[in-house]
Image 1 (cartoon, one colour):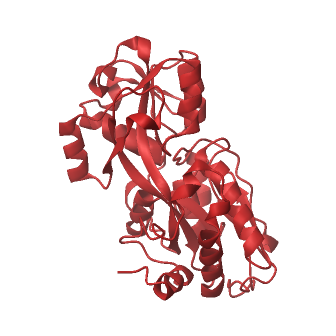
Image 2 (cartoon, rainbow, N blue to C red):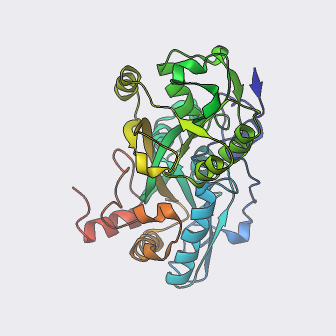
Length: 347
């Protein structure tokens, strides 16, 4: 039995139809109200759809739900761009993260978006949550940070493995979100199908409150490492993180695009040992219709060369050494490609 959320319709022509029937993505990605984009907020010429470089341009960055890493980090990213790109005004807006951001950027309703790299790959092929609808009017603009699936349980439950969660109340993340996909991937690899547990579908911030209040037994999400929600939860209630078993990890790596990530003991004060998990990459994407090469170049240059101004913990990964991480098999935004080529960042 599912608790909360609305299942995804299998076939949809635009982001607006999708948003009516689903609550989308999260990376730490919870529900949030999404402001509309007014016609006069879209940059550039109204007929050509091209931007005017950095001259008086107002654009929007789709982040995530309020309280999540995407939302808080997105605000800081917008501040850096506003400070360093002449004439540019970036507003970071709350969304339900990856799938919504991809569809809205591709549909020219947002200019920038934060996303996990896996749904971005699925979007250009019309796979996964996109169910045959191709969304490819976007390009990769830079790496943001690694996202790690983390399965937290109350310590007093006596649960030692993910397989032991059978019959329990598990929050897997918002419907059709990256968090839910990762959660279900891990559960299925341990022999647990949806009918084997009671499903809750809330964003991770709300889910953490549910676990604190004993309304669920376990919560799972694709999150930054470490993540504030888990650190805060651990101060309110004794919790454990569950490891992905070796056989399950091997199956996941063979059959999906997730990679093995180790949550090290020092990442959280309450851990006594390292925890094996799976992960993906958070990336920045930009519209290839509304952001021209020049503006795209300036955004990438100024954001990543001044990323040391970001105070959010995950901002440490936004450096020039890692900037192309997660770009494999994704189209590059022309402005980003030019910047990467000028700085010998492409193989």
